[in-house]
Image (cartoon, rainbow, N blue to C red; front, top):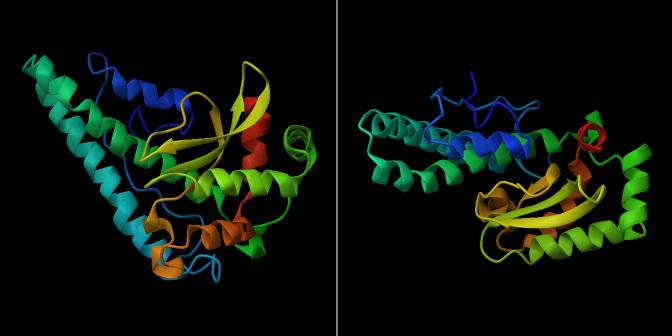
Length: 223
């Protein structure tokens, strides 16, 4: 059902799309949301969710599948120039698919735990690294608002240092140097229909629907 690039949202899964001589083409598909489009209101309205999921994420799925089909043809033709030319489309659309698949799982309605504070090992790690949960939010929001143009803000786990870190990536670049735990989309398509160009307001409110249970599960697996 999912391609090599999208079978997992772990950073290592994306690297397989960058090996054109060994990849095997299978189409990726748009994942169903684990909640209805209006389930995150009033923090993210139904119109945004529907357009973001059914239009934007679908476009990344389509773009990745088209690029993989062209890659398959270029492999058969032994056209190295075309293979290299396709890497940008594979990375952009494959990254968009991976990032958004994680993003939908990062969110949950208030009725299903959205916005509940992290607990246990993750809460302890946040306090240890940032001083308090409130200070973490301030630092994360500052990083997210500071992304120039389009991109993503992340909480990731550094396996080498065994620490959690805040990071950002441009455009649809996936998080590769850290294990992604939490990703927030700061492209304008994620908030413009409700918040216009006021990204700080979007960042202030999105914490009301962050699914810390899922983030904690990723942290437990990574650490």
